[in-house]
View (cartoon, rainbow, N blue to C red):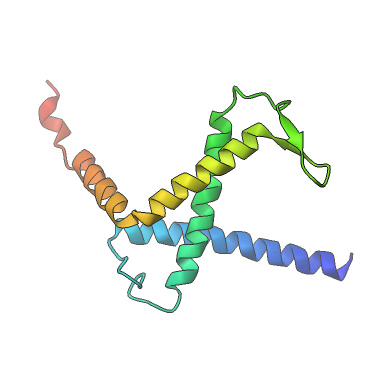
Length: 133
């Protein structure tokens, strides 16, 4: 096997692991109230790396969810780009919408996380036993 192929494969695997771990860490830190202005878990050194990785991870999640949600747009709709590659309209719409959702989520992440945390606590704090007759 070619050495460049092996190095590229290792690099891609490390990038995917970084994005996954950053997304998981950012989500955990958000719900455990461990995010401050420039620190995550009280650590300032890696906060930017985690935020960037989390942003990329959430963008990918939203992109694939929206792309699946746009099942009614046929794959035949699209155009060829300047390189001659086929670009589906479904992919373009999903990319733009996912970018906007991720941008809004991260620009107001403290308010969004506070709202979600209150909603989740409200759901799990109900005493379901008294409501069953």
